[in-house]
Image: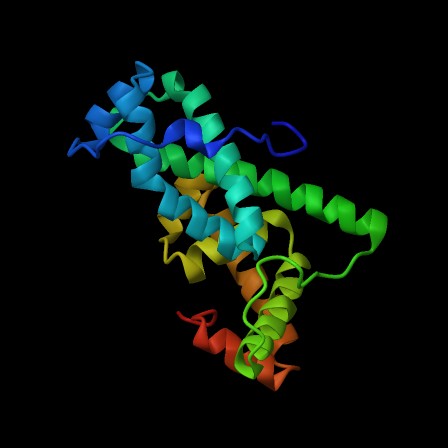
Length: 212
């Protein structure tokens, strides 16, 4: 896995008419490097990839960079897909790998530069409500940054993407007991940190961060 995200242009994987193909048929086309399959893979899975990446990383701009790397890896490694019916899980596995790599890189960068989260990316309209929401989101992301990459991914996949413990274990190649421990650890630490900030506590509650 490269240390920096590759910059494969997304324009190369869009275009063409959508096809009503099953995941297995799409996987077969992807393995054969057929143009329609490249575009259809992007259309079918890009929303999921972008949503998860934005929830984990925190900004749309960085999420788009992650998506480029994910689909670059998916297209490059398509022939390693053993079960065509598991294409969605195959794509999600690369989401996890790329995000883990990016989170580790960000943590190293913070240790080197001791930088604070920046509000420069994806600016919102400067209304009072937007400014407050932006500030709360930055504060919550700063707390997520204090978790390990593994615990952060487990928390986001469980609480924000509503994946089951079993799905997370399969996607991240972890045991179910490890996922449960990571989730408990992340939840405990975040609860403690958030409870000291009433405004942030209300924000997390509104985002479903404390859902069961």
